[in-house]
Amino acid sequence: MKLVKTITLSALVVSTQTFAFGDLLKSDDTKDLMNQVSSSVGQISDSPITELLTSQLDVSNEQASSGGAAMLALAQNSLSSANTSELASMIPGLENMGAASSLLGNIDSLNAVYDVFEKLGLDPSMVAQFAPVIMGYLSDQGASSGLMDSLTGLWK
Image (cartoon, rainbow, N blue to C red; front, side, top):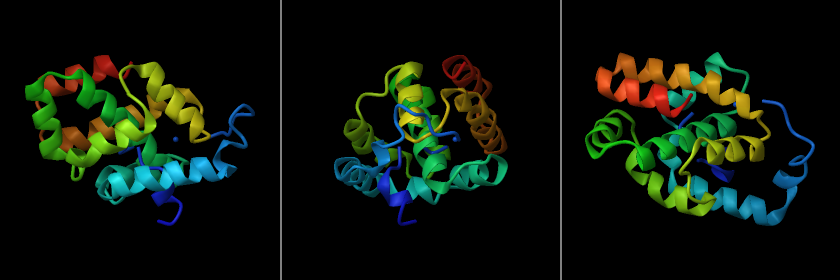
């Protein structure tokens, strides 16, 4: 949880370190930012989605919670208000995501999610591995077909 508290945009919900960002997580400024984000969405790091991601993918708790949170932030910023409300009702801590999103920058496109994944030391292609895990959780929670279809289109 120590490192989880160092960046949690979510996720909820990633695994090779890129050369371009290899030293990024070592800087004090980045660690401070990660701590701020983590405190903004602490519940997401303890969410069932984070647990599913870490158990099904070769990712750390920090990567799972932050990557998942980035994907969910994109959903919150892109979905209709009805779908956003439905999503928020299914994911503990999602209502706290707004503060974390502003700390990491506006997550308004899939490219922004890819950037977050890279900063986490994950290949952006991991989004395609996160999506079915998150979608499976939402399906188990009884998500509507409208929400599921919207997320499928958003995370392609």
